[in-house]
Image (tube, rainbow over all chains, first blue to last red; front, side):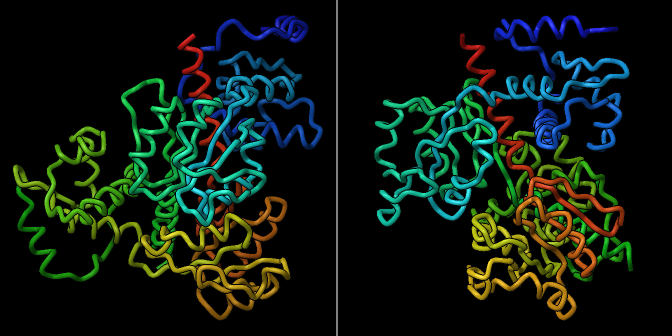
Length: 231
Length: 231
């Protein structure tokens, strides 16, 4: 099937799609990985890639790639491959890279300060507009160009400026109470590094719980398993 | 079936099991989460828990919990529940928490310095014995009680001291080359934060690639999806 006409038509009329494509949660989970690989291909100046090449690069089957990418209209052309920029733009749009999301970091400790300086946010279109802490020694300081404000100013700040997302790097003892304050202040996304699993009944609140320790434990396990197999 | 005698027998003869139980990869992936919850229960002084209570707490079905935990002999007793400490000890042993693993951190930038001070490693039985960097301004300094050494000393260091694991927080441009040096030096576990996916043909090398940005992208996606559903 040749979808090239459709694609060209879409390219010539760059208006936002009326509705987001219906993409399964499993595919969504895989899209950030495509985002990373496509980004790298663009950096290398590669304009087209076949599902076969992408398959080799990413270590998944070509049929999986075709299934995943056809989901949201990233049609490859037989013998010609995918348009790398077009795919990348579509994935970026679906993943909200161009949505202008604004975030605050709660907790200006080691992790908070490491995150605010990480290029990861900018690359993914997220703008860190403030940090918050309770420590008077930190409040008023600037890290990575971002001011650390007093936690008592949180509600006032959120009332004045749209904050879409809060990155939680505060001690876990305060995670629940603070996350409730954040949600009450209208924040609808929590990126949670506290180690406590947070969840909200409101469907409108999105939470991503990050458990770095879980990944470390898996590595521990595999190291021990390998050591045993050697014996 | 009543396995309580078996358990008591095992408890009375605390010798290491002859072989590790055969646990499926899916269950292994879930164990770090049990580890966290059991740890918290122990902190609260809870000695026994039923699969029903644990189910409510963790938001998974009681039948899933029974299946997961029976896998490696954590038999609960009908109407009596699981012995929290016993379960925890078994999971710790399986996950290598008591294996005395030793790690180095490659890269003493923001993330490396945040990680070395994180209690996560100690809680999981991993001992950070050194950091390495190429920056003369950092070499010789101590962060979180750990000395930053010159990358040129890496091979010598690994020849003298057993290093099980390297935590990679260096710039991605050097990730591949450095990881090859690490593996050549006998390190068998890589906890990789560089954003480049690393893999080795040697089955004896375990790699955990951490992609924080992927988690951020999923949050972005869900925020945009929710915003759209609201409109």
